[in-house]
Length: 403
Image (cartoon, rainbow, N blue to C red):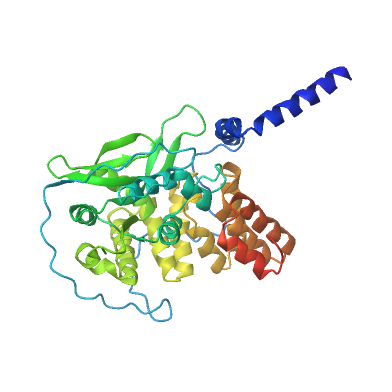
């Protein structure tokens, strides 16, 4: 009995010490990392599973037809743009104040570095407090980063596009605007956390003679070199997405930088066509297949998007992939494949427990199946991870229940 009381008292003491802010900040990430390792041992595997309802396309179609009016909104013709000026051989913008990223915080840290370029005086924690209050939340997407700039740094404007090219990145840099990219890389580890992962980087320069960009990497360090080839290879996994920031009072000449990609719908159509060209070159390219699905999803072509995602998953996607990108949930849900939504979300949550997007879409799947109680539980769990998650707030409001 005395031993048991002693154990309880020690536990209470440790719990009390853990509540000290400095101790909690230092220990929280270590506990999260340890839990992730244990989950990796319990749920091993390098790849996501193929959905049970998959209809696998064995050969690529010869071409992707242009969206018809019943498949998407009309696509407007791009506004005529000025003739593109020649690019200098190299550009090196001033390196902004660099920040070492906190645990799971490369998105907020990279955005903070980008905003420092324009004189912003905040830090990554000001951004993560809004976008990912829980340090165990392992993802912030580009749309959330844009949201922060527009709502918390209103003297700056931000936007993003997909289907980026090396030339477009260089054009932003040549006109004085650093640009954020999201790309894949490989974690080298002897434990279950090794393998592919996603990462943000701010580009601040380039040099054609050496075929390199200069990037501000919140994990590795400032002024890091990355070759055009390595960036492009890692960038493909995220549909070649990029984000740019500029002062509202000094708007960037976006027409001369983006060309036809200035029009968002045209940009998506061009990205869709690019994914198809890459599939024609290599039918076994899982990232090109996934990008095809994501661009079809933009045009609400849900069944075709689901088929593309099926093929990508069949070819093999890294287990972290649905930590960062959520298109399969949406495509499967709108294609009536509710069981596949739940199965994919649960596989994701096995290794990434604090994935609010997986919780959200599993909740909607439960709702469609008539299990309102499970749906509410998932929506509230998503809000526990991120109390500022507007989609989960809407879901609970839709069901007429409190947060």
